[in-house]
Length: 210
Image 1 (tube, rainbow, N blue to C red):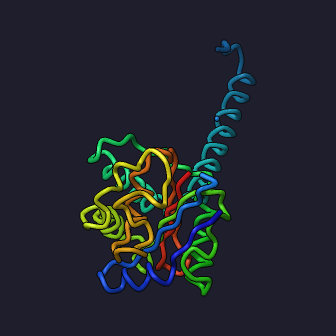
Image 2 (cartoon, helix red, strand yellow):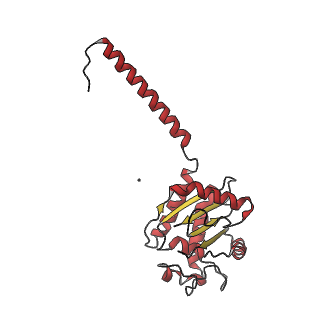
Image 3 (cartoon, one colour):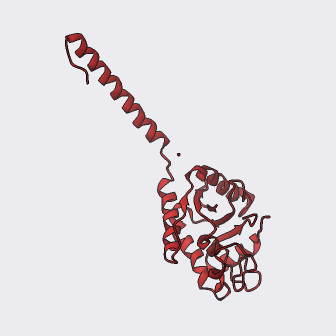
């Protein structure tokens, strides 16, 4: 079962100066030189190996993720915030990052927030709308600060298991107008992995939880 509150969340976050949205799915690896010929062969072997090393370095450069720094920053920020609340760090799920990039691009391209939710097998999702690589930390901080709202005062008591009806924890903001879902996802004990994906258009950021 997938739970959404996209229009409400978007309206509230524009009003509060925070652009974001949250959703949770509750379905919840030495030779000895003896002659000149031997020396020549040895030299040849060394040259060949050097070429191979150069090729390997070139391949590594080609395969380098241009978003690596942004992804690492995103996950580090989430784990620093969790640590401030005595929570263990989430493991970065690198194998899903390309999938999250697609989710973010799909959403920004017209699908809307969370339109691709579930496509990467995640159970929870936060989304920063327009922050890009340079603004992701401030977006995450704003999401974490939802806990300071009166309507989110009870969220910590329900961090052990997903409960959309947790007392004094208005996940979607339907009852009090205080949206708590981003904080709930980031602080949850039932998630162990996280990944961050960035739209190829340079604006939206998806944060998925497993």
